[in-house]
Length: 194
Image (cartoon, rainbow, N blue to C red; front, side, top):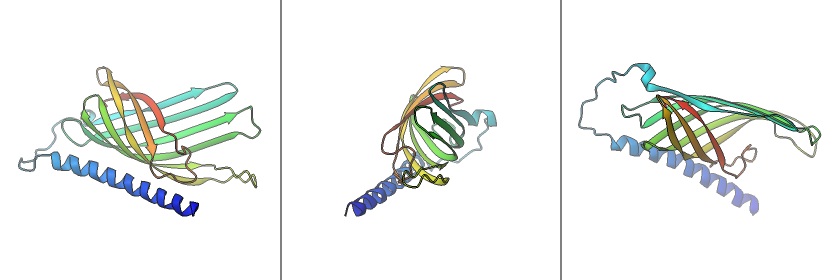
């Protein structure tokens, strides 16, 4: 009975994630005025592309390394809607526990919408190759784990085309092998052009 509830909950959350993403993109499409004639975007490519991501380093008893470069492309002239891709790598070693070493890598596809200059909504598909450890047989195997991340964040311009951002995301898919579990994913970083 508990397994059935868990399965239904995951299915509901996965459906809710896809519906939310679809609705977000539909609302953006409907918000555009369909009576005007579209003109080709005359901005240079460098003004339509933005770069960002995060880098985390901790050394000592616990060593953690994380690198997540991202690149996005603005779909509209007002720079409110963007799509993008990125890579993700993390490494963790805890010297307090025997054999407590793990790493993962993967890729991401995302959409961001900025209804106002300082805030953005974020929908992302993250696919990570990780090593879930079985405590029963001590077998280490690598598997691809899907994540559907939903949330939003705050952007503060630093000057020029650079800014600093802070975001909170939730894994709506809740795969049993998710590296995030049920807790929110809180992160930040620096963006150039975003």
